[in-house]
Image (tube, rainbow, N blue to C red; front, side):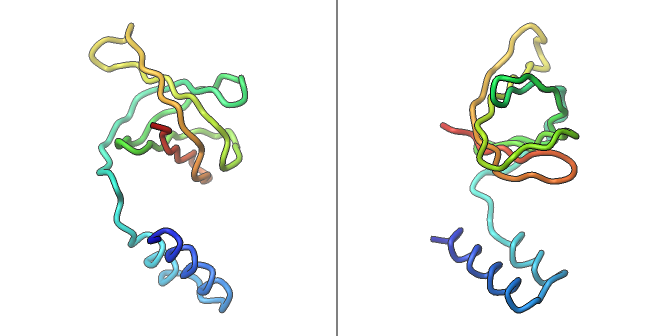
Length: 112
């Protein structure tokens, strides 16, 4: 319900041409379900069977942001391989969907 309300507000603001600081404040003011933690590490990920590399920026129980120059579409399934900082030989694979695309990278929502 809350996300539907946020989308409706954004659409209303854009329809009336009200952009700028107010738009960002409304969209970014939604509380996050999970707290983000800084996590800067090289990660590898696959989209549609192709392998890529990026640098993680942060992570939470619900998702993560990966810096990459590659362009992807929202909604694509992704598998992210995290190499544990304490033991580089161990890796964890997390599955998710691309939820956000920016000029700096991609926001991933984990599928749990």
